[in-house]
Every structure is written in C-alpha cells, then in structure tokens.
Length: 437
Image (tube, rainbow, N blue to C red):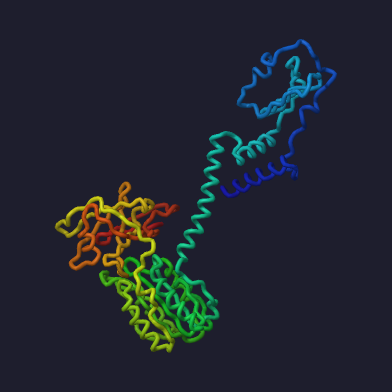
C-alpha cells in the first residue's frame, strides 16, 4: 500500500512539475483572474492609501504567495495578489477587488506537492530536505564502500564456472579464509589453469571441473558460516555428471571443542554423493597457521601434480585495519578465573554490542576474537582466563593505560534484525545466543 501511495505521489509531483514548466498539462492551472476584469467598471475614486485596503487588512501574511505592483498609474494597471487558494486583481486607487479566481482543489494539491518536494514551503522543511539529500549521497557512498571492502583482497574470476577445471569454494564468516583461497587461485592462474573462486553457497553445476577445493571455517557451535548455509541444499540440487576429486581444508582454533567441525560435515556430505571422490583426508589449520596450511598444500600438490609453492603473503601477519585502543579499567580474576577489561578508542566509536574484537597477542597470524559489550563510549570484554591461554593470558597482563592494536569485526548475526516480530535468547555456557523469528 505504501509503495502505491508513494508512487502516485511522486507521479503527481512529476506531472505538476512538467505542467508548471511548459510540459504536458496533466493538472492544468486555472484561468488568470485578469481575464475576468471588466475595465468599464474600473473607478479612480474614492482614493485610498494602500494600508487602507480592506482586502489586504483581512488577508493574513502567511497565506500570501506573491504580490505584484502596478506597472504604471493608469487605471488599467492593478495589484495582482496570489494567495494559497485564489488569485485577486485589486484596484490600485480604491482597493476594490476587480476580479477573483479561486483555485481548484486539484491545482492547490499540485502546487503544494511542488513546494513540498522542492523544499519551498519553509526554511525548516528546506533544511530537512537538504539533510535527506545528503543522507542519500552518504548511503550511495557507504554502499559502494562496504561492497569494495568485502571484495578487497579477492581476485576477480578470469573464467566462468562452467569453463573452469579447478573450483575453489570458500566458507568464511569475516573473510579471513579468502586470503588463503585467493593465494592459491592466483598461483594456479599464473600457471595457466582455468580456475573459479566463489562462496560455498554458490555451489552449482561445474561441467568441466576435475578438482574441487573447499576451504571453510566453522561458526559458533559447529555451524556453517554465513556464506555457506545454502551448501547442503545446493549439493542436492546440482548433481555433477562427472567424477570430481575434492580436498577440504578446515580453519579454526583448537581451543574450541567444535574445532573445524563444519569442514568434517562437508566431507560427510560430499561422500554421500556418487560423483565426489576424496583425494585426501580433511586437513585442518589451527589459528591460521602457515605451517598447517603448507602441509595441506604440499600434499595436494603431490596428489595433483600442480607446481605450487607456499605463497609469501601467507607467511606475513595481517596488519590491515588495525586500530589502537587504550585500557581504561580492568578487574582482577575472580574465583572462576573471569575478569572484565574496558577499552576505548575514538576510531572504533561505531562499534556496537555483539561485534567482535580481534587481538593478536604475538603480533603474528594467530588471532583471537572477543565479543564486545558497548558501555557508553567504552568497549567491555568479559574474559575467561585459561591456563596457558594465548588470548586470555595476554589480556590479563594488560594494565590501565596500556595500548594494543586490534581489529573490529562486525557481527551481523548478533544484531537485532529490523523486521523481526519477536526474539528469544538462550544461554550456552557463558555466551548468550539470539534467535530471530
């Protein structure tokens, strides 16, 4: 309903604009009041001052749209007064109304529409319209910026999926796994191979594929990352007509019980098909370890015969988008070895509760993620101190005033959706998980 009403309104405004600027007369303006003047009835007496004109005294200034003075002292010249609802021609000597033309309701609405959508109806409304226009430009810019940011570091496919010999599909929640996949893709392209790189949810028919490489992380309690949730349905929908050898690399951290669980689930899913042939067992990469990934690459190269080397960029820590934060306060670990630590940074003011803060305790590839609780302008982390824990131990050694470099990871799954009718929350150990309907 709102769409139809909005469409009609803007069409109404468009037609009005065309009419008043010489276009198609959809909502025609009424006849001019001057056409109704009977010049034989024009008088020059009794002569009155302009301030004595009764019609002007009875007309509020707020209803005045336009006032045109007489061009000469001839009786045929008059005051032309345009109000919101009518047009008047007033005798310049006596103040009598020579002619009056009432505006039709349609014309008044058309005129109001034009003033409304051009910001002419008042200073405040003009400022509101200007602000709205600025927001539109901001949304256009931010949309492109977000898209480019998501695609940053990802190569553009040189070949189509239907033509590729090697298919690389990636499951990643925050894009970190794409760094590894893109490095392999780039090397294979340089060696003249036809390769296609995409999300796991984009699994489709690959008529010329011989090799399938799947690199995926695990989200939450062994679940699929956001760009891999459709994989199971897509595998059932698209059964390959030829045999394809597959290899799976799981990314995660051994500090979690469900380490790389989704990678093993994908392996089970593929093994249930007739066309998928496992080239090697599932390999796992702990904490984005270059050594673990190199072990997989060495074995995959030996099995396939491709001439591959460990990409140099995977040996370097990812320091992009790191921001400094300062420790404002902290507590000591309680009887359950839990403590709170508060951080502040002017460059991370847009962070909200539920977003993730990535820290790098050893300034290398090893990354630890902590959920943020936003309290005022500060970010609070609730940390469980583990014996020999890399991340928790690092945070526990921080004192008030210390500074560290972190990266903000937006956690869209934890935010309230705009159209959810109701929400429910359930605790798992020390973490609260939302569920939307």
